[in-house]
Length: 611
Ligand SMILES: Nc1ncnc2c1ncn2[C@@H]1O[C@H](COP(=O)(O)OP(=O)(O)OP(=O)(O)O)[C@@H](O)[C@H]1O
Image 1: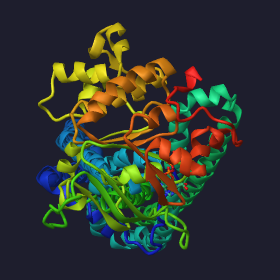
Image 2: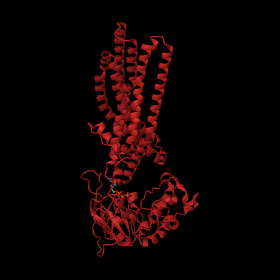
Image 3: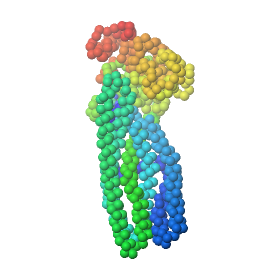
Image 4: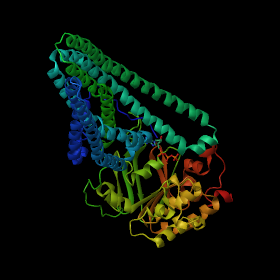
């Protein structure tokens, strides 16, 4: 896993423009959202009728000591209150279901895109950054659509209507109430700018923290085995303290805007109360009007006070949108078939060919030499070729180029004369099967994990055959045989068992081309010998490239290619290379692992256990 890719947000990015990118997802539910917003506007404005009823009550029945009028007024207030509550309930009901669908669609798109992005993207991005986008960020988006999007409109309309009502009651008191409007707006603008930067930082830090948690869970055996829980806990604490610091900065900004937004209007209401009381005492204003005026001002307190956190939620949603589209905007891998060249049919074209292959990792430091350079290799049809080379010589990289897990920098690879870029990815992956040294199993049954390597037509017979080739008899002893669920990453199985299932997955589809990256490294010598014997039968009619570190694996192959310094240094049989290439003899002696050249038993075909 790698570092945070998080691109710093453009400092002048507009939250509105960013949020507008959600429109295609919101479009299908726009009618519901608009209806819900209208219902909320009506409900909120109903609340503003209450002060008018109060005015009528104070100036009418209360002044004239008319109990029946007071009861009538109280009944009106009750009905208004119930109607307001029901309408707000209706709004919530209207948005709940469509918004959860929008969130699910956004999540499905993100997942779909992450699956179609090239391996190079996943090399660059830490998994926590992807996870936090799929969880926290999408939750923030749903909350934005459910709450601030509606309530900024609702509160805006309510404030306008309320101020209108107050100006109509008494324009001088109305102007007093309006005095704080300008400083409040300036504060909001400053707040928005500052908050957007901190919100972005916090959300990226959540991603980093998620990565640490995920790595700690997946690597729990290493952490426990090496007693690293303290250092891991320290790393977690540090990241979590950094996140806490950022969250506190957010809280301070919110407290500041809240302080301004709450205090200034309160001062204005206080001033209006004093002025209004003087006017009532002078007989210039009725007591009912003052009550109505102040009740309206108090009714507007919540719409005004909430602006601060609604703006904060908008900023967080804009940041979440930005982070979401950073993934969605990445270019997915091409579907393949982009170069439509007629296949070579000449002699020597069949089998697997590497012609002038050059490869450099996209994230390699500029100026660094390519991992592979001018690699020419021909594996004849039905032939198995072992790929041998020192650690870091580029063996895994070369094998990853065949199923197009990475794109060539230069040169071409052909399968039976057809350029791999001329085949669709689907076609390419039915022709080529792979098993990597680190076998990944998914949370599914053993059978499903193995059959993943074949198209839909494969069944129980193919499964049995593949398990046989991989010598995976242990499957029969599992509680439900091939139907046994293996846990996350198959952790309930041993390394060797997982490797055998991965091998079974590679051979189950009877691929024409088989790429095995040191597939037997975790097996004991006896199991390895048994797997090799069974594999030989499979390899008889498959063209295979097998990364090998041990003589026993090399002997599975007809010929061997020695990879050195990013190039193919020699091709020949195991015995030829042993005689002619000191580097090969050295690698086969095990000297590469222990750092010494030792006299070897290589070339005899013994497994290491037998030596
Ligand atoms: N995603 C990556 N980005 C940049 N460089 C990489 C990446 N993956 C591997 N490399 C580099 O490419 C080189 C070849 O790596 P590769 O894994 O192909 O070697 P290898 O021969 O398979 O090694 P081993 O025998 O240890 O498995 C190494 O120097 C490695 O650091």
